Amino acid sequence: MEDRKQTHHIDICKTRDTEIDAIICRVHAALIEKGYDPISQLVGYIMSGDPTYITGHKGARSLITKVERDEILEVVFRKYLSDK
Image 1: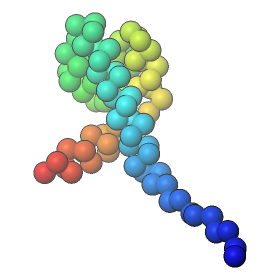
Image 2 (image 1 turned 90 degrees about the horizontal axis):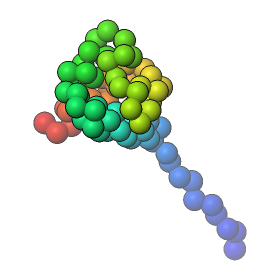
Image 3 (image 1 turned 90 degrees about the vertical axis):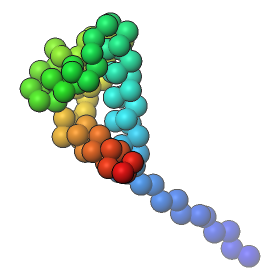
């Protein structure tokens, strides 16, 4: 009898969304810890591209700049619209 290896399908889009979601959550937590309004700061960053909207606390600025702003918007919209 022949051993067959199972092929696993990995959804790259879902994996990337999960990574971006984790980054957004970590940045959100860092902004709250520093006393900022996280929504206002994240929107400012998305609209302007200026990373100084994001605190450097806990590496949040470095994390958020590893992701393209359009990718962040895609994840946010996908998540928002999937709840509707």
